[in-house]
Amino acid sequence: MTHPRATPTARTDSTPDAPSTETHPDSPTPDPPAPDSLAPGTAPTPGTAPSTLPSLTGLRHRLTSDLDPAARAWLEHALDEAAAHPGIHGPISVWELRLAEAGRRCGAAHADAARVLILDAARAGTDALTRVYFQGTADERRAVLHALPHLVSGPGALPLVEDALRTNDTRLLTAAVGPYAARHLAPHAWRHAVLKCLFTGVPVDHVADLPGRARGDGELARMLADYAAERTAAGRPVPEDLHRVLDLTESVNPAPGTDHPHGKES
Image (tube, rainbow, N blue to C red; front, side, top):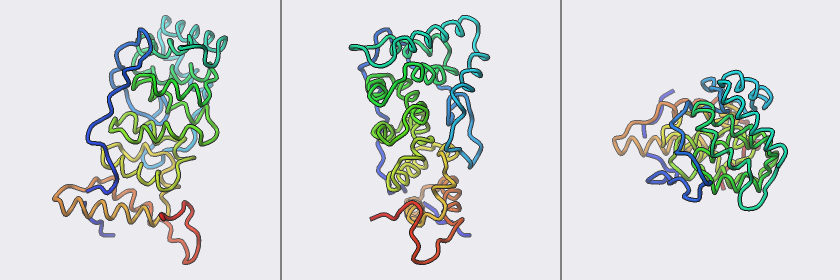
């Protein structure tokens, strides 16, 4: 097929959001960049990012085997502490303090996974996750987004995903388009999330269940074609990932008169 060549039609921010200034006491400096992933410690298979995640038990086993003895002991203590004092307690819970320490204690490469495990041990529900997200550092926000598919069964935490999608922080965006978004984002918001990834350079391999949700989506195909045409008119290159997503939208041609699996734009 011949692909159009293109400028985004999706709304984007001109600058990344600054991390919240309402951080936990003794919060460490932000973790240096670690490899992005669909789940802490995992890498996506190109074009087939799953809508499910490894179990938390498996995540804990892998993490504890990778940590050095001192970090392993710290993590075990933090998990026991969170399990003994779950939920929200006063202005800040003890497990929230451990979230702030995780980067320094476990290292940047393992901090996301450690934070997800602490949130699970603390039985953090939507209210607790929302507090951590909006009061925490960018690193803690990312961990909350990674934890959502493990800890929240319904769409109640979508405001956190929607907030992350308004930023240009590529690590937050990568976490935001994981399995929780694949399960719960409405078609209109999900399509714009895909466009946001294309605009900011987040590889679409990180978009969970991309083949399933893009398949036969004529409205997404139209938006991508508009995006490509505008970039071409402006003399700007079209991201190669755009062609990959466009091919996915054409992988099924729904019969005339049938409902689209993910809805049409109004």
